[in-house]
Image 1 (tube, rainbow, N blue to C red):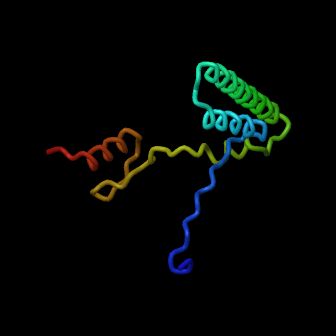
Image 2: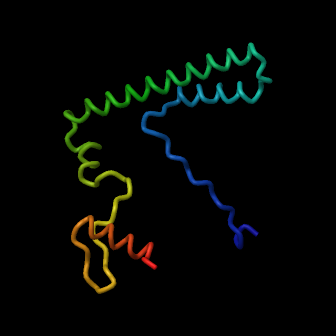
Length: 124
C-alpha cells in the first residue's frame, strides 16, 4: 500500500535565524503549562509570568541577532548582506513588463498596472 499511496510528508518549518534551543525550551514549558492547568486565578498569574519571560527572551535574542548581523556587514563583505543585495529580497515583486493583447510589451509600471487591470477586470 505504501508504494501505491505514499504517505505525504509534512513540510519542514524553517526556523527564524534568531531562534535557539533556549527559546524552544521556553516555548515548550509555556505550552506544557497551558495544556496541563485548569486556568485558576493563581495559575493565570503563573502563566503570565512564564509568557512574559518567554517574550523577553524572544526580544533579547532578536536584538542580539540583529546586532550580530549589523556588525558582520563590515567584517564579511561577501556574507549575507552581499547575497541579499545580489539576489534581492525573497518577496514577490510586481512584473516589470507584461505582454499586451496586440503583441507589444508594456514599458512603464503605470502601463503594466493598467494592462493588468484591463485584463483582470474588463470594462463592460
